[in-house]
Length: 356
Length: 231
Figure 1 (cartoon, rainbow over the protein chains, first blue to last red):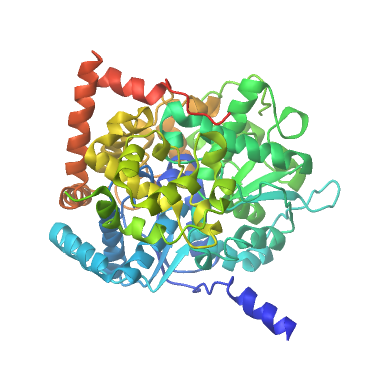
Figure 2: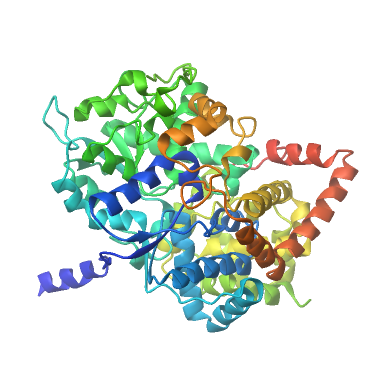
């Protein structure tokens, strides 16, 4: 009886994720700062797993950052989203997958609002027809790209070249996972594990051999805060929140951080640099930072892709300590090389944060 | 236009965000902004329950409504399904529509955000675009960011982007026909109208201060004059 009850409660935190045939839309932030992550996502689902993920050049930003920084009205962002849905409909797809958490949260909010207020949906349909001569079906299924990697986590594990295990000690690597607020805090039933027990990244880490760290500020925001980052005068808010998380996780000695949202890895990576410049404080071992990764980058490393093909040279916090722990073979001399090995010089070394 | 509360009730986010606050303070306890700024989402939600236009007008003119980071952590934790974050979004929209945003330092910042977002979306189709993301405005991008900025085309090519290229892919050039549709959407849904009001008020303020538009934007983007922090 008790077991049945628990099963029922847990079922509310599960998410049925379709296996194939998705319309894929990109993320503004991921494309700018972690471009190779999107390349890796499509490489895995299309070429390694043989699934159908369709992309069109005609899709645009969803407008999510502008909306959550209050720059554009709700009807504007909803009509942009309706246009994206129309592109999906025109391409003959019903499953929609977004590379961005802000987008995923906003698509969810939009679809839920339309359910509560059908007059709003009708108004948006009218706006779309008037401006673009387009019509759309609401996606049958909405996924975030991490849901897909979560679904295929065991398949990826079965093809793995490396594990999240320290090759010197044989012990699992200790991993901090950071979900990103808009994944499930607004609509818990839409995320794997909900808002209370988010399992989308934890599932990947367990499947690939690592160990999840539970620390006090595990669910705290990275500090993006939209206008609190976009305006230089407000950035103390953003950095203070990241600082709070690092102070909280530091005693647990994480080997790495894996992130869900495109923005979070940027802030968790760059604010480590700024904190080190301001206070001389670093959070990793021997003067290094704690390396921060997107889930696509971690999947790519596990599958044996070259770290520099994965774009890890674009991180400020050096990733080499983690690569060495995993026993990954890489060529340090190729880190800062351009296309076809062209010499691009090297970034300057920070004052305190040790980099390679 | 009617009373301020009635105007808020026309906003779907306000209707979704305000149910019945029991003043438990859970939202404030979990709020990243409340720890950093003089900010208390509990009291804002409670004030809305008063439906008092004078209170609402003061809020629309205040620094307070601009402190939230819209992380929506409050929405998860509220035992009565209120969403102070959604209420804030409705208040900010009304503050911009009424021009009351000009009364606060944090409100006036909105002009700089809108300028950047409108330009990136309408010219390129992205909220963030690498050729407009500068080291001057983003020193936190770090030494690696500087290296990326200096070698932008080469590095994006190296990692597989299609920066400003034809067809699909990472940071592709979004076709003009699609940008034209975004522009039409902005026109139809009131984004330009709101921006025009904001521009007129912001340029008048710049003139008062004896600043050019560029100098005014630099000021609201970079400076904090008020005491905003929760000490």
